[in-house]
Every structure is written in structure tokens, then in C-alpha cells.
Image 1 (tube, rainbow, N blue to C red):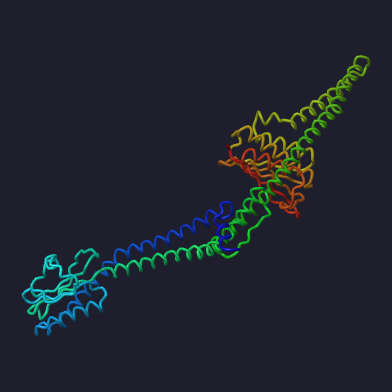
Image 2 (tube, rainbow, N blue to C red):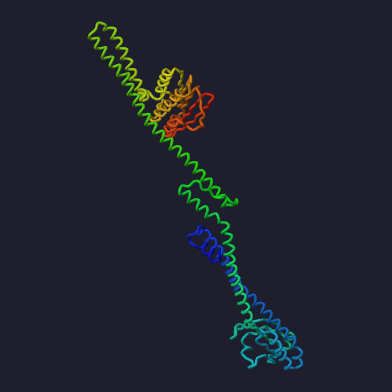
Length: 467
């Protein structure tokens, strides 16, 4: 890919990583440019001052050199040689704009001006104190002139004044600034190139993470991101993969629960219909036949002579019919649960269950037996017990069962155990018994735990908040 094409791809708004890559490159470019500009500004502030000080030293050095060279010609009254020395100094130093010599009385001896000596040069600057040398900056049409005064024989033979122009200094400064600007431009280009390569390498997995996230948003939980190096992006990729795995497991659990709920609902409806059919058949077979027998017996009482014996039979038949009706009523909704509470209802149901199925059972209550629980909670615990004992009768082949109800504390504890054939609690649940118990407990924020093994024995532990 050519430089123009990859740069366009990097800055195109619809590409992955535009935000982070463009911002990082912009930040790197801004930092590089800021450092370069600060360097240039610092150079423009400090370099003229440094170069000016160096030019002052140079001007004073040239003036002292001239003072040494013109001492003998000046003492021997040879102004021609003095003029030649001044001309030679100006020729060998391009920055020298002028040079002239004054004798001890301040009279002009020689100078380098071709158009005549400008007299205002003698009055433009104050002379240094006697016996001292200095450098002053004078303004002229050519710019600033560094005017240096050097003494000849400590001022006894006169003085030399030399003026150096700043033009060469300013040209040097402009050249340095151009070099700095060029260096800044090259540094910015290099920063963009290197920064882009580094950022592209670091953020290469960002598009993959974006695509994977979009796939998860569409419901695809099979997508994974290659972890790569163990850096922050590698840990982010691993965290993303773990999140997707957790989501997949959660989806499976939800799907299983949804399937179990639908199966439970279907079987509940079927069980309701079966229960209605059973009640209908029992009412038809038992209550209907009994009532038919009563009608026939009563007719015989009217016609025959064995009225006394037939009356006793009819009383027994009526009692059995009444007991059947009461048993059906208790199975549908025990009145004792509403009238006397959960403890009495559990004990009566356990007695009836043990008698019907020919096994022994016991109910133990810990705490205040007279304490009543909220009606929904009592109904839930009663139905859980019914369902658990139904499973005991159908599957366990137990000879004994036990029920323990703990009414102490904020949590009501219910334990139902038997000594029959156990099962593997971790195996998939086929029936609806335990699923129905779990669904009922979920309605009252309860939970259950099962301890069982195929070698024998099962215990169901139920805990629900008192509410």
C-alpha cells in the first residue's frame, strides 16, 4: 500500500480505529510541533543575546588589536601607516564598518570613511570614563552597530574606536531559524510515520474486537478474539472471550430453564386435566355407585322385611362415601391448612400418606408450633411436601420417611428425607417433580438443596425467608 493510500485509510472516518489512531497521531504531531516551536522561540530569545555578547567581545578584541598595532606609528607621528593599519583591519574583518584613531587630545588621526568623517559619531555616544574601555550599541541606517573603545597606552597616547555591524549576525540567526524550521518539519513527518507504524501495531486488534463485539450484539456467541501478546489489549481480548463464554453458558442455562418451564407448564396442564379426570372417575365410580346403592337400599327398605340389616349396610356405605368425599377434598385443598396452620396440615397429611402407602413416617417441629406463617408461604411448604412425598412413593421404594420443620429465625427450614433408593442429583432432571418444587420456591425467594446417592437415601433441604 502506498503512503498516500495508507494515510487516507488511517484518516478515513469509516475505518475501524479512526478515533483512537487519528487522535494518537494528532497528539504525537502536536507534541512534536509544540516542542519544536518552543525550541525555535527559545532560540529567537536567547541566541541574539548570546551572539550580541560575542559580537561585543569581538569588537573590543579588534579594537584592542588595532590599538596595539598603531601604538608605534602614532608615537612616531606616522599617520599614513596608521591609516594603512585601519584599512587592513577593515579588509580582514567583514563585520567592521568603520575604525578611527584619536590622539590624547581627542583629535582625529586617521579613519576608514571614504566620504568624509561623520563628526556626529564623536558626540553620538558618551565616552567611557578615563582609563576604561567599553562597547556601546549605536543605531544606524544599516542597523545596530557595536561601537568599541580601546585605549592606546592606557589612554596616554589616545584611543581606537571600531564599529561592527550586526548584519552577519542576523544572517546567521535567520539561517539557524530556517534550519530549525526545516528540522521541525522533518521531525513532524518522522513522528507521523513512526507514530502511525507504532500505533497501527498496537491497535491492530481493535478492529477485530469491534467486529467481534458487533457479532455478539447480533447474537453470535461462537466468535472469539485471538489474545495475542500479553499486554493490555491481550488482557482485554481474554476478558472479552471469557465474557462471551459466560454469556454462552448463561444462554444455555436460560434455554434449559425455559425448556423446563415449558415442559413443566405443559405437564401441569396435563396433570390438571388428569386430576380432573381422576376426580371425575372417583366421584362417578365411588360416590355415584354408593349413592345408587343407597337409592336401591332405601327402595328395598320400603318393600322388604329385612329393613334393619339393610339400614346398617346403608349407614356404612354412606360413611365410606363421606370419607371418600372428604379425602378428595383434602387432596384438593386441605381445610386444616387454612383453619389450624401448616404444622397440623403436615401431620395429618403425613399420617394419611403413611396409611395409604403402608410405610412409616414422622413429623418433627422445632420452634413455636402455634406460630402461623403467611398464607402463600404455608401453601408453598405444604405443596413442596406433597410433591416430595409423591416422589418418595413413586420412585424411592422407601420404608420410612421423616419431616423436620424448623420455625426458628428469619429463615424457615424444611427437611424431607427417606431411606429408599436414591439418585444422582447432578444428572439431568427428567420428571417435573423437582422442577415444580424449584419453581414454587422461586416464587417465595426460597431455595432447595438435594443430598442423595444411588446407594440409598435422599434428603431435600428447603429454606425460605419468613417474609
